[in-house]
Amino acid sequence: MGDYEIKYLADAPEHIQACAAWAYGRWGVQKKDSNLEHALSFFQKCAQTNQVPLTLIIINKENNLPIAMGSLWKTDGTEWPDKTPWIASVYTLYRYRKLGLATCLIARLEQEVKRLGFDKVYLQSGSAADFYRKLGYCEIETVQTNATLAGTETLFVKTFGIGDKQ
Image 1 (cartoon, helix red, strand yellow):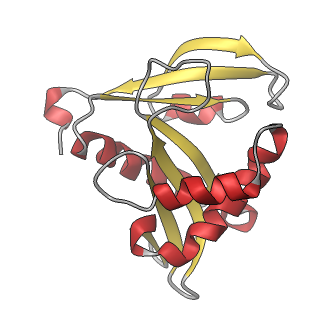
Image 2 (tube, one colour; image 1 turned 180 degrees about the vertical axis):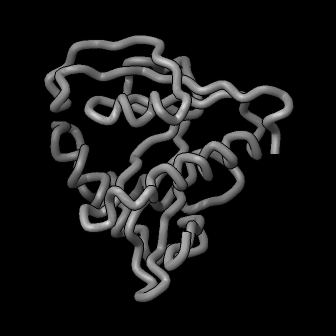
């Protein structure tokens, strides 16, 4: 990844506030029961390495600042409560998009899923659904929603075989 490095948020807790601000600014402001303090509290819980929830961040080595994040959560929303774990809150700062960082982050999150002993992972997406299809995610269900630009929210799954274990 050149000038970028993937780290556990647990190893760079000084960036918890940035992750909380990104998540709240991108998704939380659309929810009545959400606030920045709730996001901050949640990302403090994501600052761990050996269980879900956990968050990975991509650091720009030049200035040691975070430029992207992605998490593994037990659940993501309330529509599909029986499914776990989830890839969630995948976010890249605008000026760093189209560099393949999200693809690298997803691949690393998939490694974490396998390392933690899961054989599948879920995610939901609106406008980025085609991106996840290209990464091998299989569509399970699509629902109509006003919460996304696409007007839909799609549930995806990716299953890992025995030979895929890390």
